[in-house]
Image (cartoon, rainbow, N blue to C red):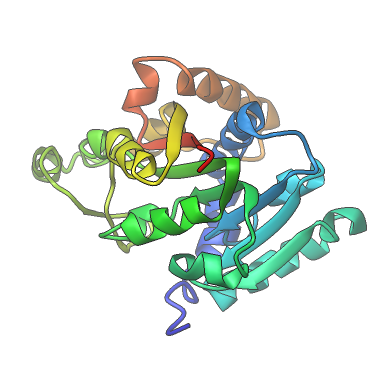
Length: 264
């Protein structure tokens, strides 16, 4: 498995990032988008790089059979902690597997899933093709492939809102950046990932934005209170609507692309 590069970031990511308004909005918006595209439960879902289960455990609670695959032992420990707090019937629908996404097909022993998720993982890879190949291989005929990644078309937004003007100017032509967790990332585009999917018999069917207004407020220095339930729900409703509409979705710092595997 190699070194656990996420060991030092597991607490910050699993306990910190998802507890913010941005984290809660991401989970809500992605969940609603997935439910628009997923087959009915109890369909099988493979969550590649699923971390602590923030996106896939709600699907398990909704009746889906979830396999969460992640290379990080620290992240899987966080997943176990969170899973233990859920009802027994939900726990029974979740399987945890420690493996790299680039070896997902081998790790699940060739099983094909009704949906394969990969959210927030491709951006940490300079070359996403091997992982995209595995995602498509693990999808059953007619199955869904769901990818969330950083939007290269919006790379200048964060440094501009942080008033790092030289960095913002350079971002228009940059191919990588240092992400909010302090590690290198390689944003991509809907067009690039769509082409990779089509080459692997997966036809893109819909794409959405994920973060827009809450992202801009955060980087602009406006703090949103995650304990203010009314405000969080209102923000999530606005973000969900923006995620489906042009030009807003194209301005989001993250995109969510959904494709369906063609029968071969």
